[in-house]
Length: 423
Ligand code: IMP
Image (cartoon, rainbow, N blue to C red; front, side):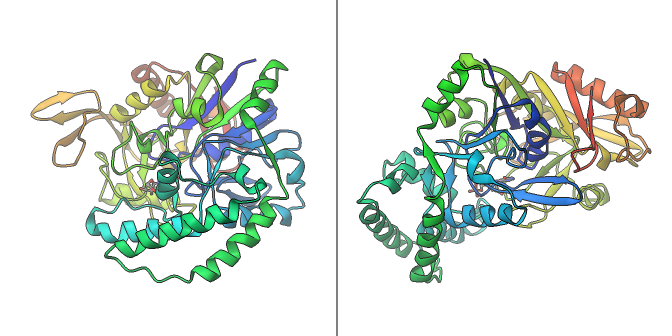
């Protein structure tokens, strides 16, 4: 049985959580493959808004098993808070939440290192969520990390101590001085570890191999977006994992030839939170309208998101890198009321028009070239069938499908599960 992937094609916050939640009924297993609590997946149903950071977005369904894969980094303190929130809804998460023994742990000192590194960069800062993501993946690739499976070993606390001591020396090395009380942070951390240990730890790659043999359906859930990928994103303004399709293979132990559909999620416009280049960014009323109507504030940090027109050059790149087979367009409703929409179809780069993403997309090198299309006035938020969509929106969709050579199979017109239109 094949595995399908679902991932974001822009700079994150495309609405992956909502779509995973909507699709979960068709899957036996939802498996998160990378990132950590830097993600904020928002789900809305029955008038309640839920935000998940590390736990896969299928957790609210009765049957699906939700797996936190080996490619994920887990902060036990944030994980415990997520569990506490689920507990408030009387959700029996223990029976359907599994954690890979190979997932790495975010230690309190990783978070402090993140803060010290960012503060010392001054204007060049990445705009990290400060959740300790970069330092934890550095310890993973540096072969120093502590994994979930280590918690079952008797000497893990000694390994913890030695790593934390090393981190403290590194924190001192930075010019920026960060105030912290390690004792307090550690007591919270060790309490949270106790809770984490009440969950089921597994050899997740083996579990997924068996599940495939038994014909189970698996949806691999990505976090962040393709333009934040450590290799293919707008480096160094990226996160520290592979957010693109290949990340699902390494982050879950799934072989590439087992992957069938790749669902690419994108917003009808573009947003970015944190620093880094953003060629179609708007600094005018149009951008403000998108931010206001789209409620563009980070689900993890609450920071306002930068907004701009859809960048087809970047989107095409993401479709190619990921091998997207089906597109899902989010927040179509936010564009209602714009008489004209702009879509960036090329960049002016070194005096020439180009249609691929070059090595360096800093604003001084790139001027977006726009194609204008007619907007629509209708409020889409009450629509639930493709036949109700206004002509101009259908034209916008057809234009994008043609440019991206990929069908758009879902159009989302609001945050609720019900506001989802299949095509
Ligand atoms: P980090 O992953 O926290 O180190 O942050 C690196 C960059 O990725 C920053 O620009 C963050 O704002 C951005 N980022 C990380 N996670 C997300 C996400 O889930 N959505 C959007 N941006 C993110």
